[in-house]
Image (cartoon, rainbow, N blue to C red; front, side, top):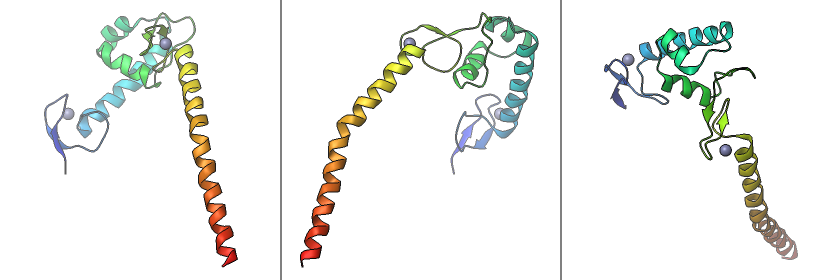
Length: 135
Ligand SMILES: [Zn+2]
Ligand SMILES: [Zn+2]
C-alpha cells in the first residue's frame, strides 16, 4: 500500500496512479474540468489567464489539460502552449507538427535498423526446424 499526502488538501490517502490527489480532490478537479470546458465553449476566444481568473483554476492546470489533449481550442482561439521540443506555439498536445513528424521518422529508422535482427531470428528458427526433420 502506498499512502501519500494529497497535493491539494494534504490528507493522507492510498495512492494508486496519476496525479497525487485524494479521491475527493480528484472528483473536485473533474468537476472543475467540466466547468472549464463549458466556459471555453461559451467563450471560445478567452485566454488562459482569463480562464484561470474566471474559473479560479491555475494556469498550470489549464496547460496540463491542454497537454493531455482534454481541452481543445478552436482555430481562432488565442490560446497556445509551447512545443516541449522546440518551443513553437501549438494548440494542443505536447509537440508541434514538425517535431511530431520528425519523431515519427526517427521511430521509422529505428524500426528499419531492428528488422534484420528479427529476420535472422526467423531464419535460425527455420534452420532448426529443418534440422529437426532430418533426425
Ligand atoms: Zn485532497
Ligand atoms: Zn516543435
